Image: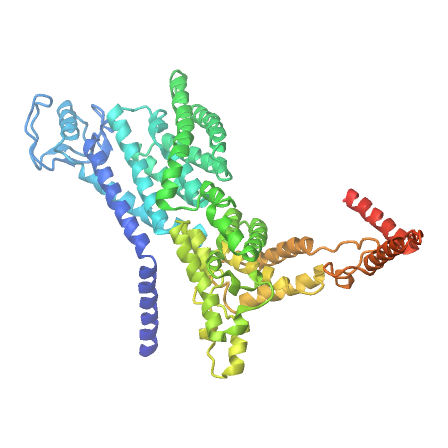
Length: 604
């Protein structure tokens, strides 16, 4: 039993250390956020008029005290507070009424800069410590749905610190005591829009939850500004999450103006606010909503370039097929270009069906074979006739085939493509076996290792990368399928998808079997339309059966000989000119057929 317990403890420790290593970046970022937030909380505590974490408004003259307050340090008299406080002195005793002298001493303790309410500070420490597990849980890959990049973690942590600082310092500098004015100057909505556009709506949703608790603490646990900030951020995330064009941000700003006004109006009614304060409050929150969108529109472009994020705006720019690199791909490797277009169509459609980022999948598919641009003749889609691999051994062929992934990643980094797109390029083959050249090498040497004939990448780590991998495989394989009917496509595509699953290529992609079924159905729909059959035209002939254009036809030869005979007879002075014979019935039929074909083309 002892050995078994030791083994279990060792397993637990190994898992613990593994978790620490895997989440080291998140842990460091959260610790930094906690320290900065604690500094901000310290400033708030040191400037607030509290005693034992209670506001001075909680102490009234003649009120029976429910606690005993003892002075923690000596405070000499001054002009503002002429009373003296001695360390260890009992200011207020529990069960006794608060005297005027005691109230003056309480005011001196709360108003003196040298006095720090240690109880309030430790309350702040405990409050912020309780937020750490919440943040860790919300932004875990399981809950969030993807693993955050370091740049996203840093941006969100910095944003939370910024919002917390505004919530603490704006009331301090502008002396705001009305809770209905409190949220006017907090840039929570601005940050929520930035996070939604650059990192996605789920990340922004969890940011809104954490912001609620930070504003709640900064507002001395008043729920009015916290609820406003939370509701306003949620609405901003919902409005902006499907925006794909920059101009739509202007329309979103007008929508947020209306939403903020409605939220503020409802809070004023629910919590009994003064209607005299309503015009100023409504004007303030309307400006907050409008400026949040406009400022976000201006800041998104530099931040998405600085952080190299795959925002909707950035991806739309990258989806432009007239960029120099895409034009070069079209000219240097037209087969690869057309293959990439078809893969993009398949991947975009499948991602739409499973709720993944279809725009990211489309852009990733456009660039996934970027590495083929330097040696296009070694890839079958660009070959017309001879095959380069017939002249070299399988090992050399595999090195050329595998290198296109590495070269694609290098070119993507030179172009400063987003990391998400680079991941798709690096993972679109995973570590799968290059079966054809492996079988060829196996014929030459039975000891051939599969690892030597496999791609050196990692299996897809996102849904989008996995969908691009499947689309790439299916598009290439279906070109070899004879008579691609719907039923044959269904069986063949299912076989290809299950092959990737069985070889472990989809283990890290977080795809369910329901997702795989939806992906297969989407592929079948697209490819069935692509490989559709056509009605044969009347009198349509097989091009291989037609005579070669370079050789003159029999009719042309006979006409030429007739002309020569006519010229000969003329020159001999016989005076007889042979007229051309009437057209055969077959010629009439051909002309009839051509006219019918022309009619059909007109209808099409």
